[in-house]
Amino acid sequence: MNIEILCTGKLKEKYWQEAAGEYSKRLSRFCRLTVTELPECRLPDKAGPAEEQAVIESESRAVQKRLEALGQSYVIALDVKGKMLSSPQLAEKISEISLAGKSRIVFIIGGSLGLSQELLQQADLRLSFSPMTFPHQMMRVVLLEQIYRAYKINANESYHK
Image (cartoon, rainbow, N blue to C red; front, side, top):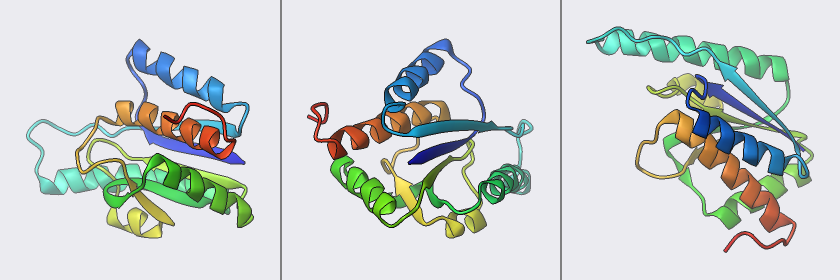
């Protein structure tokens, strides 16, 4: 299985880079992982709703362009209003996608303002980790950990509890 994580923005702090690197290394025995960092648009100070929407649209266009380049994929967009799954349910979902013949799952983490409604509607699944909002750098590490946990669950290996 190929797992691609499309992220708006870069991991700036060394501790996030190290945490993401550790989970990427752990995942290498289960799947082929690619993390693609897309440009983050700068929002002017005291930006209004129109400027915020322009940033969302610009960042979402970059995601859409990458999705088109990847071709057939099962797309999961992280969205605070999405469906919440437990770790075992995420593991089951990844297994179902694989059994359905999909060879790539793409997870999308938007920038600080989120993703466009158009992009969210195109996703096969909108996934929420919580009704709370998290920094997108932290969310990348949490997502990597949960994907790793899902693979460990599916392999019947200890780690989950």
